[in-house]
Amino acid sequence: MHHFHYRGEDLYCEEVPISALAEEVGTPFYLYSHATLTRHFRVFNEAFQEIPHLICFAAKANANLAILNLFSTMGGGADVVSGGELFRALRAGIAPDRIVFAGVGKSREEMVEALKADILMFNVESSQELRLLNQVAGEMGMVARVALRVNPDVDPKTHPYISTGLKQSKFGIDISLALEEYQLAQSLPHIAIVGIHEHIGSQITDVTPFVDSLSRIAELIGELRTLGIEIRYLDMGGGLGIPYDDETPPHPTEMAKAINPILKPLGCTIIFEPGRVIVGNAGILVTKVLYTKRTPEKDFVIVDAGMNDLVRPSLYESYHAIQPVRRLDGRGRLTVDVVGPICESGDFLAKNREITMVEPGELLAVMSAGAYGFTMASNYNARPKAAEVLVKEDRHFIIRARESYEDLIRGEDIPDNL
Ligand code: LLP
Image 1: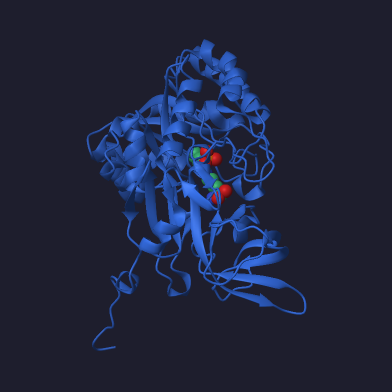
Image 2: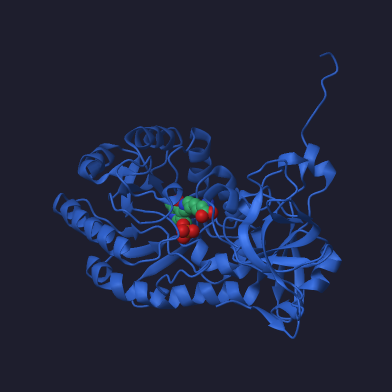
């Protein structure tokens, strides 16, 4: 459910016509609906009301300060994977005791920053990392709270690039080695074990992989407890999918129904790290048609947003619906590639897509772009990053200004005596 809808011919975000926003901020721009963001957060939160839990929104999906702040006001925290994301989360006003820090490659400096901030816990992914964290915490006269990220070896049946819980994956500690690693953690003086973490993949459209992996984790928690290792937090990561096209992922309440029976008896506080399911369908990318081009082979619609703005189609061949911002009657349909201005053949937003014919100057909405859209944007081809706009009812806020050319060269220097 989202709040992008047609009124007559015009596509609106809540009460605001999108064409008016394009007029004001120019194109391309990301557009988020406040009502959709809050609804998705609330629905997820309420789905798990029966069990003690904390939602640590995965900042990698969308790290805009206004959006992180919004979730924080709703009682959420953040799952961060870098010093930069930690900085953003803190700047957005997220309480440190609602921040968890994951990632296979945390640097010493990042550990120091997170210890200083006194975050809830580190999700540790290897024994070397555990030892370094122990050392860094020791140097600071502190004790680091940790969960070990366990790789449960479950196939989430999603795109291979976003599967993370398989044996051959770089993530986490193999479940067969977990007891040993926990014992190591227990022996380290500046480490306090508080939890266990898993994250098996993203855009998961079936509850089975969650059920399977959590069953394995529950068993492991039992074994840890017999060794006297108490697990207070079970962080089950994110991964719940959304409908981009014709997928039918489980609703959060369905997921809750399937996993609550495993979670409840554990008596842990459950941490969720949803990203996509909260923001994915709450955002779109608005772009303008620059040209239409017919070659002997193909028809192209060339737009002013490219793979630097939204890389998902190029990187994962992922599907994003494309809708006209003004839906005019009597237009024909045409199968086209919707492509950007970047000098790469892989620069496309849609391939062989049947769309309603469009003219230069008209606007298109690339749907379901709220997750891993702006956060994966780059400056390739020296393209300033797009603006981000948030609509709440009939008001709109520019939550990130479009980058300028000056922004592009910030920090660069031409040495005098080269
Ligand atoms: N927690 C951890 C430790 C993660 O690695 C991720 C995502 C999440 C939570 C959030 O997962 P979500 O609920 O959004 O599925 N760029 C890719 C997705 C990469 C996901 C990486 N990890 C894409 O555009 O599809």
